[in-house]
Length: 344
Length: 103
Image (cartoon, rainbow over all chains, first blue to last red):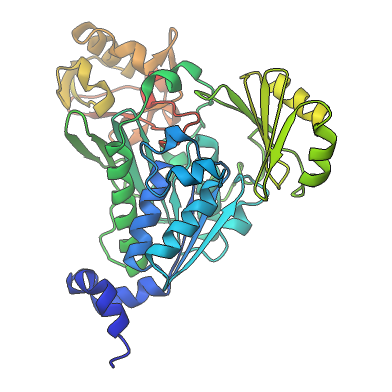
């Protein structure tokens, strides 16, 4: 049997496509893509990339799956919700059954300035599936520092945007938005909602752009693509064609990576919840913590997370010491609850 | 003088679906004021409060960010192309999905 037969069987329809061909397919098989965030964007993009035969996929997400995710987060099902499987792990499991010939690694972690370089090590492309700007500015910094292209994508309501950032060649996110907008616009999240087709289209565009970058197609777009699935509008905007000489990140100042900006607590608007991140990678042992907390509230845990309910609040703890405190948007209250019950 | 202003998708509901409109003025502030007169409501989607540009919006004059020029005082000339660019923040996850110009 011809040694490329397995490739041509599985990937025959995209190998026939002249833009990819056998040479392109071979490049994809040797490539590594890190998908940060496994929500609607990340799951759809990861599915496209796994099916396309990207050799190594690393999927990073901090969260667990809830029923209201199933409307648009394509890799998850009701069993994942019932079994309290973190998104990164569920995505890994589903993608392994889609394509067993590639490496898929799910990592449960909150991307932050301490771990992002480790999490993206070895990446040929970073794909943005995150739900907040702070993480995007971090991705931007790590991309520029290590000269790894990234594909920005965002979607909310019925619209979305995507753009390729190729270090040294195209404008980056800080070239376009030098100052990171602050998060925490609670009412927006509650009212905007999302139509699943918006992230699906953006993620599909992101994955094909990632494929083009990996193959080395010459005309990788530097335009900002904007869509609205409800009105059917599609825009391509060219905002400059090279990095801004005034951009700190493009000039080698990685202020997000150096933690000059960012917070230890983050209000997760629309969820009535706050994330608390503590210093250091190791959290308390769940077994020990459960024993202690059972005296004062309801506790359940598995290898991925511990849930603790007390006084009308619910705290979900992860092995890296991070917690999501539900039932409040008050960051100092959440930090106080964490300090009181878990310890800082 | 008259310039072309490219209207991003999230604001086209205010311009009757037009992706590009003409506006008159000699500075960005005047241009946005003229837009507001023609398309009421557009100004408050671009500015926060009185004069501060929304953190989710960048404005470019011929590809140059006005934050790096003179802000709202940035002069415009006949035939310039003004681009209003909103930043989409959501990831269709659940948290902090602030829609660009809906802050």
